[in-house]
Image 1: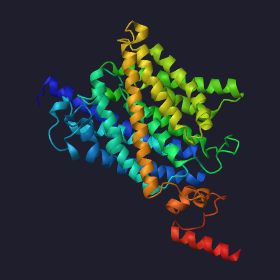
Image 2 (image 1 turned 60 degrees about the vertical axis):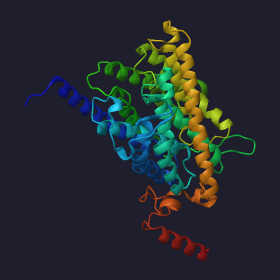
Image 3 (image 1 turned 180 degrees about the horizontal axis):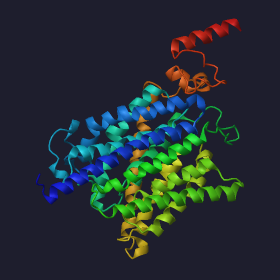
Image 4 (image 1 turned 90 degrees about the horizontal axis):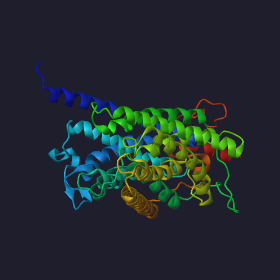
Length: 436
């Protein structure tokens, strides 16, 4: 069968983008394992269900509304106004691949944002209102921010802001949205003492969290290199290398820094340090040298270690470190593009212009993420309520929200002999109370 060079190239690019979309979607499995490992066993199933809702409800929200707001025909540089339910023409995007392949890849980005929030609100947020959060973040809050920077007529795009794969548009946005969420939601019961000191509430399964981190690291090879949208772009190699080096440097420095500071190498900090390096390099992976990616990742690893206790001082209870990893390191990585970009960076003779643009952009995106999420969580709090009762929190959200536990066969599980039924659990508890 005859085929032009153009059609062959388009076919290869389509296969590349679809494969990378699969890698990005696999990151949700990484998020689920990471967050489940970082929470207590009585909440493991609940956090996995929240991530699962991002993959279902969030995906539908992005299909119905989000993609159109992000990439539809522009309205005053603020959002798109066409293409809802993926209808209409998309010639204005200038794609060399089918819009369906592009949508699949972008949908993986969209559902990552509410998943970042899910970790921060773990162990005390009701399940039903979280579904609303998942839908609206993927359908509205993230797409508006994404349009500003990646839409052809977005106002930050016009200014020349560089955010190759989303340190600002995804990670910083999700991180500062998480901060707004935990401010409204409040800390877990018993997390802070009257004198302001924090109590450690260790996750129940750090090996599971480490597995989640490895899956996320692996998926990032789709997240960053896939953003080229072309399997024929030779810059893929540098993007992948920079991504890998930043993660390695972040994990190394976080581990060594905790060893030096506390006398023990903290596994959770090493895990989040590697993730912080990945988050930080996501903006500049296509624009910086490998040595710069090492420096960016290393600094991000230290920032994670310093940010976690600082957030505790502010009573911002974040069980998985989402704010430190995504908010702090996403902001840092976005700014570093203004310093280290080979074309326009301050350290490469480009002057202050790009750094100024990056600063304006990260402030705008972070403020939007925080303000929009604060209003959303406040509205849900005042209407349907967002927090489980103290009794339900003590029992664990697996039982109170889903009527079953994550580990039904373990000897220490008091509910292991019960069928998976909320009603049966309630009857059993009532019977035990009567006997007492």
